[in-house]
Length: 108
Image 1 (spheres, one colour):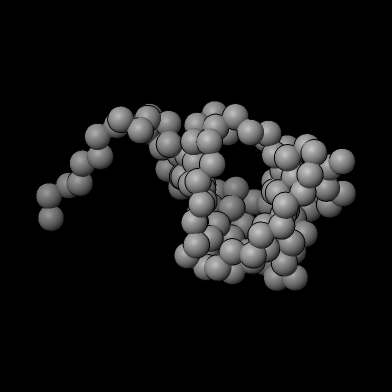
Image 2: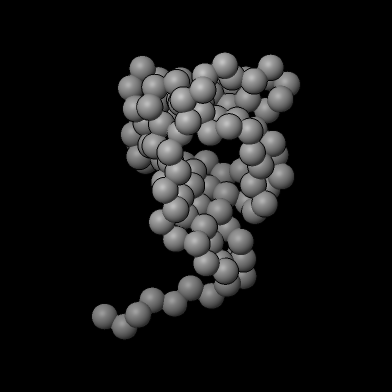
């Protein structure tokens, strides 16, 4: 059973190139991403402490994450994410399109 909330989380793409896609997600209380799956492995870094409720189609998990805490997930898992907190939360999602891509920094 899907989450019943209809408040959408707000994605803001910060970078999208051949190597990575970086998206900031902002969630009002109770907001959801909607059902989706990632085409690449990805990392999530919490910007604000909060409870993430994740529905995988069979069950819902609920996890309290601290600001700065991160986790990684593989590609291809269909899911919906909800802000289970009473306050707004935000996180950065980094999808790794090309793990072999060379990252170079400009000279200082």
